[in-house]
Image 1 (tube, rainbow, N blue to C red):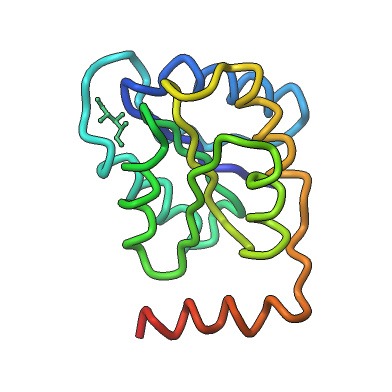
Image 2: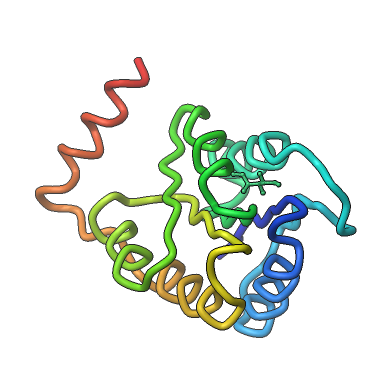
Length: 145
Ligand code: RB5
Protein backbone atom coordinates (compact mmCIF):
# COMPACT_ATOMS: atom_id res chain seq x y z
CA UNK A 1 0.00 0.00 0.00
CA UNK A 2 1.21 3.50 -0.88
CA UNK A 3 0.60 6.20 1.73
CA UNK A 4 0.87 9.95 1.11
CA UNK A 5 2.24 11.90 4.04
CA UNK A 6 2.33 15.63 4.76
CA UNK A 7 2.62 18.14 7.56
CA UNK A 8 3.12 21.77 8.45
CA UNK A 9 5.43 23.16 11.13
CA UNK A 10 2.97 22.01 13.84
CA UNK A 11 3.51 18.38 12.88
CA UNK A 12 7.01 18.06 11.48
CA UNK A 13 8.47 15.77 14.17
CA UNK A 14 5.37 13.59 14.11
CA UNK A 15 5.52 13.29 10.32
CA UNK A 16 9.18 12.19 10.43
CA UNK A 17 8.38 9.57 13.07
CA UNK A 18 5.32 8.33 11.15
CA UNK A 19 7.34 8.09 7.94
CA UNK A 20 10.10 6.04 9.63
CA UNK A 21 7.53 3.83 11.35
CA UNK A 22 5.52 3.06 8.21
CA UNK A 23 8.66 2.43 6.15
CA UNK A 24 9.83 -0.04 8.82
CA UNK A 25 6.47 -1.75 8.48
CA UNK A 26 7.02 -2.10 4.73
CA UNK A 27 4.70 0.60 3.42
CA UNK A 28 5.72 2.79 0.50
CA UNK A 29 5.64 6.45 1.56
CA UNK A 30 5.09 9.42 -0.73
CA UNK A 31 6.37 12.36 1.33
CA UNK A 32 4.64 15.56 0.23
CA UNK A 33 6.55 17.78 2.65
CA UNK A 34 7.46 19.81 4.47
CA UNK A 35 11.07 18.64 4.34
CA UNK A 36 12.49 21.03 6.92
CA UNK A 37 10.82 22.56 9.94
CA UNK A 38 9.77 25.98 8.67
CA UNK A 39 6.48 27.86 8.85
CA UNK A 40 4.14 27.16 5.94
CA UNK A 41 0.42 27.31 5.12
CA UNK A 42 -1.16 23.91 5.87
CA UNK A 43 -3.76 24.05 3.02
CA UNK A 44 -0.93 23.82 0.46
CA UNK A 45 0.20 20.49 1.86
CA UNK A 46 -3.34 19.25 2.50
CA UNK A 47 -4.31 19.66 -1.15
CA UNK A 48 -1.09 17.99 -2.37
CA UNK A 49 -1.76 14.90 -0.24
CA UNK A 50 -5.48 14.90 -1.10
CA UNK A 51 -4.70 14.86 -4.83
CA UNK A 52 -2.42 11.83 -4.38
CA UNK A 53 -5.54 10.00 -3.18
CA UNK A 54 -7.94 11.29 -5.83
CA UNK A 55 -5.49 10.61 -8.69
CA UNK A 56 -5.12 7.08 -7.20
CA UNK A 57 -1.32 7.24 -6.91
CA UNK A 58 -1.76 6.55 -3.17
CA UNK A 59 -4.44 4.59 -1.34
CA UNK A 60 -4.42 6.47 2.00
CA UNK A 61 -3.04 9.76 3.33
CA UNK A 62 -1.85 11.08 6.66
CA UNK A 63 -1.63 14.79 7.47
CA UNK A 64 -0.24 16.38 10.61
CA UNK A 65 -0.63 20.00 11.67
CA UNK A 66 -0.86 21.54 15.13
CA UNK A 67 -4.39 20.34 15.79
CA UNK A 68 -5.22 18.14 12.79
CA UNK A 69 -8.25 20.35 12.25
CA UNK A 70 -6.96 22.81 9.64
CA UNK A 71 -5.54 19.96 7.56
CA UNK A 72 -8.87 18.09 7.70
CA UNK A 73 -10.87 21.19 6.76
CA UNK A 74 -8.64 21.85 3.75
CA UNK A 75 -8.39 18.22 2.58
CA UNK A 76 -12.17 17.76 2.79
CA UNK A 77 -12.64 20.51 0.19
CA UNK A 78 -11.16 18.15 -2.42
CA UNK A 79 -13.85 16.06 -4.10
CA UNK A 80 -13.60 12.41 -3.08
CA UNK A 81 -11.73 13.07 0.14
CA UNK A 82 -12.99 11.91 3.52
CA UNK A 83 -10.43 13.25 5.97
CA UNK A 84 -10.86 12.59 9.68
CA UNK A 85 -9.13 14.49 12.48
CA UNK A 86 -8.60 11.92 15.25
CA UNK A 87 -6.89 11.96 18.61
CA UNK A 88 -8.21 8.71 20.09
CA UNK A 89 -7.94 5.04 19.16
CA UNK A 90 -11.66 4.37 18.74
CA UNK A 91 -12.10 7.21 16.22
CA UNK A 92 -8.99 6.23 14.22
CA UNK A 93 -10.36 2.69 13.83
CA UNK A 94 -14.02 3.50 13.22
CA UNK A 95 -13.38 6.25 10.73
CA UNK A 96 -11.99 3.50 8.47
CA UNK A 97 -14.62 0.88 9.39
CA UNK A 98 -17.68 3.12 9.04
CA UNK A 99 -16.67 6.29 7.14
CA UNK A 100 -14.13 4.74 4.76
CA UNK A 101 -11.92 7.74 5.60
CA UNK A 102 -9.05 8.05 3.15
CA UNK A 103 -6.98 10.60 5.09
CA UNK A 104 -6.11 10.59 8.78
CA UNK A 105 -5.35 14.01 10.28
CA UNK A 106 -3.41 14.28 13.51
CA UNK A 107 -2.53 17.13 15.83
CA UNK A 108 1.16 17.35 16.64
CA UNK A 109 0.30 19.70 19.51
CA UNK A 110 -2.55 17.48 20.72
CA UNK A 111 -1.10 13.97 20.95
CA UNK A 112 2.39 12.60 21.52
CA UNK A 113 4.35 10.66 18.93
CA UNK A 114 3.64 7.31 20.66
CA UNK A 115 -0.12 7.80 20.45
CA UNK A 116 0.18 9.10 16.88
CA UNK A 117 1.94 5.91 15.77
CA UNK A 118 -0.75 3.75 17.41
CA UNK A 119 -3.51 5.73 15.67
CA UNK A 120 -1.66 5.43 12.35
CA UNK A 121 -1.41 1.65 12.76
CA UNK A 122 -5.13 1.35 13.53
CA UNK A 123 -5.97 3.54 10.55
CA UNK A 124 -3.86 1.70 7.98
CA UNK A 125 -4.70 -1.78 9.32
CA UNK A 126 -8.50 -1.37 9.35
CA UNK A 127 -10.64 -2.09 6.28
CA UNK A 128 -13.92 -0.37 5.43
CA UNK A 129 -16.80 -2.55 6.66
CA UNK A 130 -19.09 -1.80 3.69
CA UNK A 131 -22.67 -3.04 4.12
CA UNK A 132 -25.04 -0.45 5.57
CA UNK A 133 -22.27 2.15 5.45
CA UNK A 134 -21.98 2.19 1.65
CA UNK A 135 -25.21 4.12 1.21
CA UNK A 136 -24.14 6.64 3.84
CA UNK A 137 -20.80 7.24 2.11
CA UNK A 138 -22.70 7.65 -1.16
CA UNK A 139 -24.83 10.34 0.49
CA UNK A 140 -21.65 12.22 1.44
CA UNK A 141 -20.50 11.99 -2.19
CA UNK A 142 -23.89 13.26 -3.35
CA UNK A 143 -23.34 16.49 -1.37
CA UNK A 144 -20.27 17.15 -3.56
CA UNK A 145 -22.34 17.23 -6.76
C1 RB5 B 1 -0.08 26.53 12.72
O1 RB5 B 1 0.37 27.39 13.69
C2 RB5 B 1 -1.41 25.91 13.12
O2 RB5 B 1 -2.43 26.85 13.00
C3 RB5 B 1 -1.70 24.70 12.27
O3 RB5 B 1 -0.67 23.79 12.43
C4 RB5 B 1 -2.97 23.93 12.55
O4 RB5 B 1 -3.08 23.65 13.91
C5 RB5 B 1 -4.20 24.44 11.99
O5 RB5 B 1 -5.26 23.84 12.13
